[in-house]
Structures are given as C-alpha cells and as structure tokens.
Image 1 (cartoon, rainbow, N blue to C red):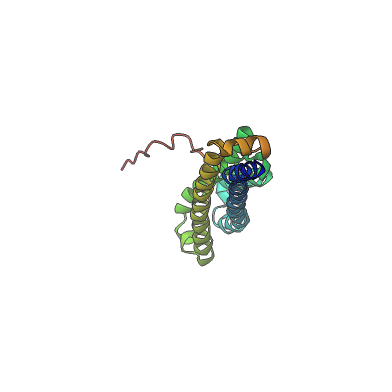
Image 2 (cartoon, rainbow, N blue to C red):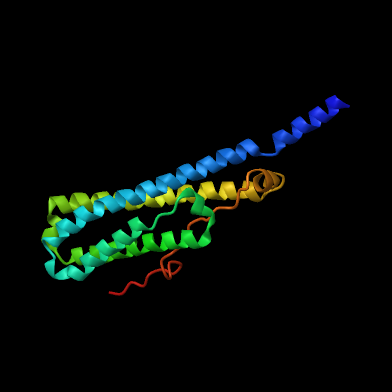
Length: 191
C-alpha cells in the first residue's frame, strides 16, 4: 500500500508543473529584461540625437523639448518584474514609452525639413542606430509577448494552474497591446 501511495505521489509531482512553471517565470523575467534593455538603449541615444538636431533646428525648440520631456518621463516610469501582473502599472509604463515613440516620430518629421542635417554623417549614424533600436524594441516586445502567452497558458491550464495558484502564488502577466491611438487603422496617404 505504501508503495502504491509513493508511486501515485511521484506521478502527481511530475504532472504538477512546478519546474516548468518556474522555468516559464524565469523566461518571462529574462524577456522583460531585454525589453527594458532596448528601451534603455533608445533613451541613451536620444540626448545625442537631440544635441545633433539642435544645431540645425534651433527654431524647432518645442519639438526638441517634447522629445526631452518624453524621454525623461519614459525613463522615470519603471516597471519591475513584480508589476507585470498589474494592468494599471503596465498600462502606465506602456503609455510613457508610447509618448516617447510619438515624440521621436515628430522629431523625424522636423528633420525632413533640413536636407543639410540629413546629410550630416553624425546624424545619419544616430538615426540608423535609433532605427535599429526601434527594430530591436519591436523584436524584444514580440519575444516578451510570446513568452508571456506561454507562461499565462501554464498558469491558467489544469492541472498546472493548481500548482501556480496554491503552491507558487503565480498570476497571469500583462502583455503589450497597441498603445498608439487608431493603430488598428491603416494611415491615410494623400498626395
């Protein structure tokens, strides 16, 4: 009888998902760290970009100030791994990053008005780095979305949901959504 109980207990431990949930939790943390790393890279590039543009576009002060302000807000709005289950904290973080992206887009429109600036080697290098960083952010966010989806499935599926809830106190994590207004609609192009 003891042997049967021991076998049943052993089998239940293998199917409880404890280790896989721990592994998925670490994957979420690692992918979130990569998202933050790419946001930090962008924040680090912005002062150089603004400084380079400033010399050419002194009368575009409002746009430059908006970029600096958005960068400051984005770097002050922190979201640690524990906040990934808090929809309000996640939305606040996502909004700050969205505002920075919007300000950078406006800055690039200003740059289009200055052919000499676009031809400047320093500016071209910074712009290429910033574009590369935006692509890295997109890739990091996609990886995070995929990792969170896998984590959330295991936290919600039976029988691992019992281990997640009662043994590990795990909750589903928030994922990114389109934060730009009307992002679901194609932009209208007029000539």
